[in-house]
Image (cartoon, rainbow, N blue to C red; front, side, top):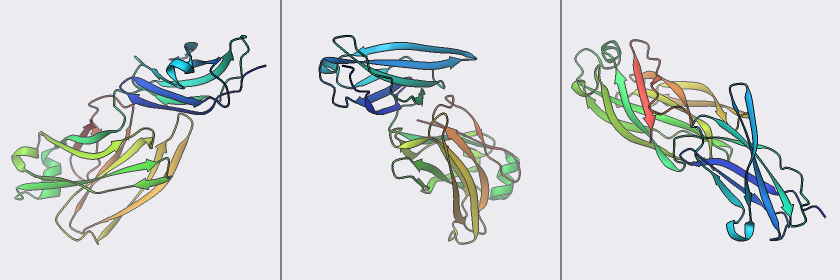
Length: 260
């Protein structure tokens, strides 16, 4: 008799260059092992291999696929095989992106660059300080909703921020890949200490859930009339490390580096 197909397969990046896979035995006993198959592409070439056979008596029903290529999408299927050699069918494919990031670790604004033209536009020629505010807009898969808390980056002087990369290290949110989408949006404005009751910023976003599935959302928030909108960008969990993301200020150039 063939064993049952495993159910409740969960796949997500958990550690750097490592993808976590778990499943439910679906009534199979300890005389059943589980075979894990992995598919991925390099260019137009497809690779599909058996990567592990797991004995649940010793190792449970989970597996860490390690030493993967950051930025690559991997697809997994699992089958059960009993001591007689009878096998179940394969589970439905589930995919995940490998990344250099560590899941459930705080994402941060690491550095910001603002050139002279942008500084003079948002701060004025004689203003000696700048205070940036950002909103990390995330999509919670479990609760099926967006979150957009405001994060104040603190004041920086002209010598610290104008025409140089300024260090921040501001914590945004713990990017738990069992909970959040692969994408978040980061929106910035320059704060003039008003009441945030002037201009409503409206944005459209798409959050990546898997290779084939995106979720769209409409987002809005309000800033003071004197505040200057700096723009926004999207971050993917598997983007390359130290990538420079460009904002869209009305004048000049502004760039941001995020990471852990």
